Length: 218
Image (cartoon, rainbow, N blue to C red; front, side):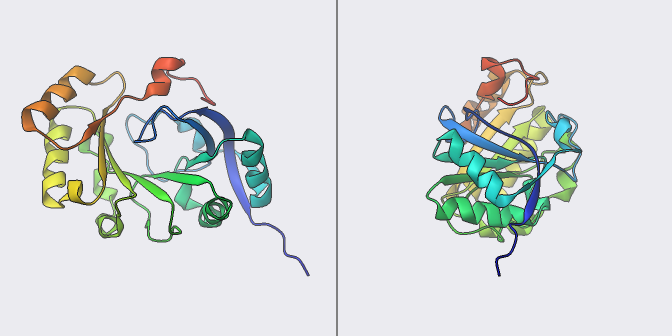
């Protein structure tokens, strides 16, 4: 007797150009799950907090397949709030996709299957959510994974620099730094990185320069 495919609540599934991470610039299929338990001061996806459409995992995989892109990002909201996220990631990995998962770092990341690229956002103080970071996650990082700091001011930068040193993050995985869009000039962050010789990758949210900053489905 067959069992029904588990369901996920989905905000949107679409094809775009990957705007962040070491995969920036590549065509990417995005699966945005609904729901988030954090409320960052600079959040740009508040529309994913509520609503969404229930979809069987089989249907999600089929829709991703129809986009014809081998790189897939599962994002949110916070995708790991939904139990079916792990099964979706496993299904996509087993089907040969390169799978990225963008997560806040508040949920345990060790539940994800081997082969998934975990892009973990370490929330800086200006996000208002830095105290909710699950620091045990750092022990589970591999060279496949990436850690992202979104910097809103100099205090955020100094805090992130301390975290890099304290946890020896550059030896664990790729480190990304970007600015809160519209809050900090990118040139300022670049100047600080250069002055301190930080072994990090500066990035812009490329999709916000290609399309309107508030556009959805891009």
